[in-house]
Length: 452
Image 1: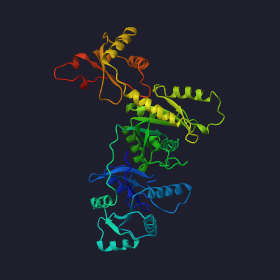
Image 2 (image 1 turned 90 degrees about the horizontal axis):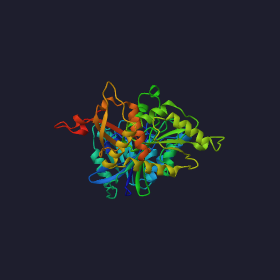
Image 3 (image 1 turned 180 degrees about the vertical axis):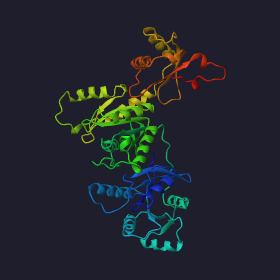
Image 4 (image 1 turned 180 degrees about the horizontal axis):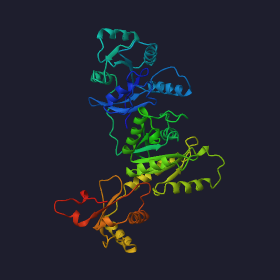
């Protein structure tokens, strides 16, 4: 993609930066809450206004760091400002001009870049009181309100006057890869390793990531977007409010992704929640790769440790035997490039199309070796099959009679043999059994009469 102008949103905590961000991109990309400090990572997205594109970055609230973790967050804000073409300072209309506001304004003006002051939450504010914000020294001041959508267009007009006219290239069949797993299994470490930059905050504190972080990279002429997500915890442990919305963002990431990397650590295997997450990915029809992270932290490894753990994991995830398994370390860089190779292979497998003639030859050979058993004197008969062309997950319609009597074990037999002949590693397969006489009724389409 082309290098787009960057607009960084900065300000003290809880002045409505994330609300402005969501309002500008016209979707709920960042979690918004009354609690101060909701945003931790620098979240970016492409905004469109008057046939012009730019990248807008939402940052955490600026304040004096109390620990090393908070210092990392504040350093990330400075990095966003350094890389920006325009800086939007946000203050709150209904509060006094604080020392933190002055500190933010001073930092922005010191950068010698164009600065805009958005006086946010100006729902019912007396214009005469707005003069106090002139003390911050920022010439361009605009009153805004996300609740009333007040002056958002004016704010965007001011932004595009300060940036070069650039239009983003439309991603060509962008491949989206989501990183999923429980909290603190190394998702953000892996995200930064794959992105080759410190975009997501990394700490030993579980639950550091709350929003979906995105990074666009190019691997062997393939455009890939990596999505880093919040850790999924047991439903009983998900707190109301911000953590709940983080969980919803993670579920949304599964829907957006083409392929999901399910992370687990070598020192904590056989966790039921890991199986649940993998099941969610399978049910969504997405590609799946099992990733053992933090492999460098495993002590006393022998030449057989990896094989022993692989067998253990294979048994735990026996419901997705087609999912590739890889051991990685973001610290040493072990198998980081191999992940891209696996992702590319899985994508190719998901796009595999089989000629109808070859499918039916396979079907007849498979049935002749082991015909389906019947129930209640009704013998299922499978006549022919076709592959769906408009489904991202490899899907097949098998037409026949008495198909409702086909046992689940026979479905598994068909899928296992189909995978043996054709390479569908890394992706689930959908088999639809359709009654032939129903499918060919007058005025009905076979694709609309899927009978499971």
